[in-house]
Image (cartoon, rainbow, N blue to C red; front, side, top):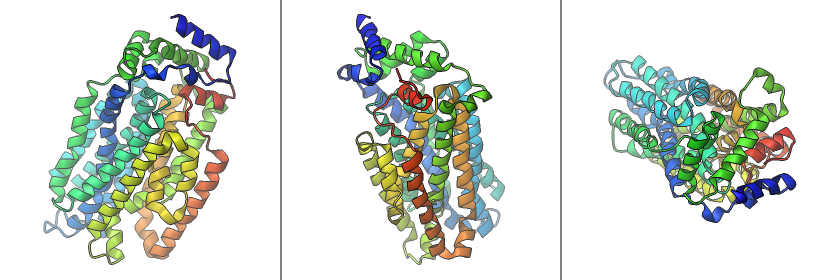
Length: 444
């Protein structure tokens, strides 16, 4: 206990010193943290299966012999894009869930609409069953896209938070590649069956994982928070010190959210940055590319359009994995700037604009507004994703493929300008220090 008191006193006496420099990281064991993160990122893998499913399924469903299930061009457009409407609603639902029932239970419950949605697609007797199934899986994807980054950022310590946070996008693109690859060998029904397996596994795995310490402390559950930290950091880690640090930050900023808090720069600034990051992410056009990959390659007269889609997904997996490895060394801002170069869209997106907006969202939003602000950020992402994916085929017809991709390239240049001017560097900082930066105070 003397060590905990001494460290806290040193931090108060020297606020310019980062609190993490006093934490004996040699005593921290990351094994169970990695296990908890793996259980959580089964959600983003399921989310990737949902995003990628339309690419191999649409060509098959457009030429299927059963007229009740055959998709016209307009129906195929809705089949691909309607999932984003469900995801936007899921973002709002997820914002309410994380504040009311916590991060862990929210993750477990979001596996249900994944399974129910794919079940409807498997048993579909008409196109409307496809639509409802896609909306349900989109709803689950929206909840997942909010909850998993928060869960990882609140359980990981600052030394590995960037790497683990990047694994969210890594599992999304791995899911996309997996469904593209499986689509080479199995039909759309068996593909939907395979897509329902990761969310089922996630529900079981999360039963054995802890709630996040920050959520527990926000509910006044100090003993449960210390137990969660011992699980995540190991038995010899200074969990009392970490709990005290989080509690001090929580007491300083309060634990309840009011609309008047939006006038606070410590809330307003990170919310605006989070929303704009998501808008610019979607304006790169990447979701339209991944949703309609096979159709794009067919229009470009590729003979093996399905195989070309797998190669594109594989490139994303490789570069997202590279981003995860270097994230805590290179920093977020540098990778976003490099990623904005429009002449390497898929690889560039994977190394920066794919994983980093979700990571920064989970880092900069204060804990007391994470439900409301997180929902607003996710809603902006999926709302913009719907606009881009639904209008993509119309843009291709109106502007031609060259004009459409030139438009996306212009957005990439705007991304770079926005990053240089407004996006802060969060590498190596605790969540409490990041909050303090936006409040204009010295962090704990």
